Image 1 (spheres, helix red, strand yellow):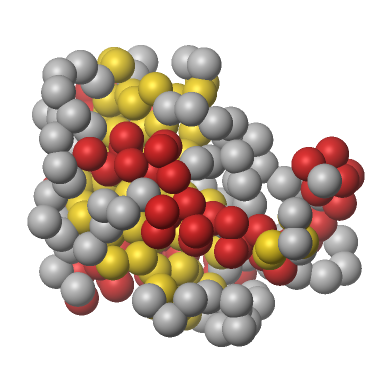
Image 2: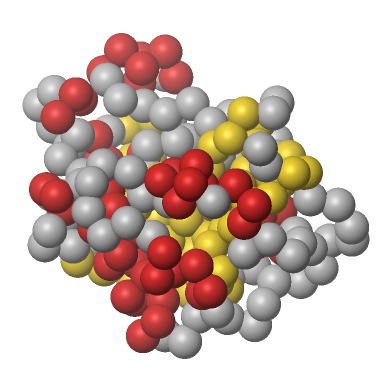
Length: 200
């Protein structure tokens, strides 16, 4: 069971980076790329990237891409990290993000998804800056685990290398490593056109 993080809010580590996973093929969404689906005049991936950037706490921000080219919608300050193995599951995208984080000398990453427009800049900020001893911090919404998730470099080698789950496998297996950060917003994601219609 995750423990709520207590104590003062402090600044993030000098090298805390944000990683947004956006490489999947989105088979449940039907024709068209879910990452580029429009909500309020912006692509879903743009909304996720803007929230991470607006948190104003990260040394760098990257988007892991694969099935869909996103060059035209990512701002110049954001790095596109290619995952040629995206068909093997979300874990491969997380590994691509970890490899990038190592290459830029990050000490921690905060990981989010491109299809959760209710994850706010404040959620990114709280997870990044929370004071905690646990190496994994999970955003919670009314007590339910969601994204983003902060992963200290000390646990990167414990993450799965394939399959359709990223950090969730490790979180379930090693609950003693996990703390919780209550956040505003919602963890609801968009998987189908009907989900998008409800948001619009």
